[in-house]
Image 1 (cartoon, rainbow, N blue to C red):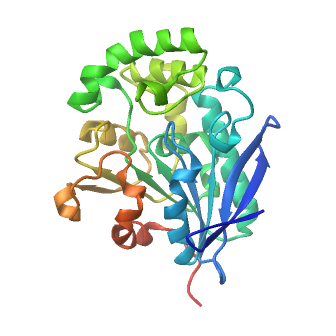
Image 2: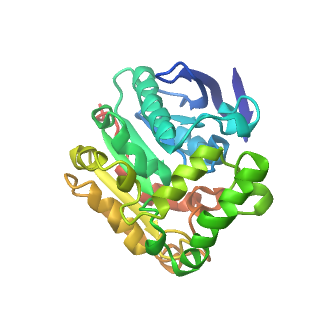
Length: 291
């Protein structure tokens, strides 16, 4: 099935996770031969549709692009969210399976893993050898004491009071209604909260993942912003350090350096940032050699 928005085309795709769950996504195919493939791995509480403008721009630059929704979210939600039996680890495995599917569709073209926030955290759960490069955007450790001051003040109340109470009442986390992020399946929110309250973030629950992070050796670029309302410089550098085998290209900007009023945690993928994408994204994408 092909859809059109602002004269940009994509195909609706489905693919199976390792346990048979059907995941949904979109495939953007350029008009001519593709230079490479970009897999966009979404942030927490962010649907694949959010990245459509950015993916369309990549398509116009000659890249095939795949976006997808984690199970129980966006177009991969089948039924009421309160019935979704998934946690963050399962979402990380969905991202792994998305890379497998992108690899099949790429047919030998080089692949870039482009992770936004959570999407940059979960590369270590995938077979990183199937990606040729990686880019993380606004991605860091979620440990609450490393958050920005504004997020740090709210974190204990969120994780210890608001989230448990809201889940008990509704069966899921009603973030849209509460104006806190977005709606999330119950066990996703619970596990994420446990991670955020631990100094080692996800390693507190999954210490074996430290070796998986250290084994990742694909060229990486880390892009972050000083006015991110969630991720501090410490949050970003803590995650970057876990990818110990990689000499990461670190890019951190103030809004003023980029000529914008505000960037924040979610602003980079909005349509009004298109002038920045050529400079900050294109040089870090994997692509086939020019002929």
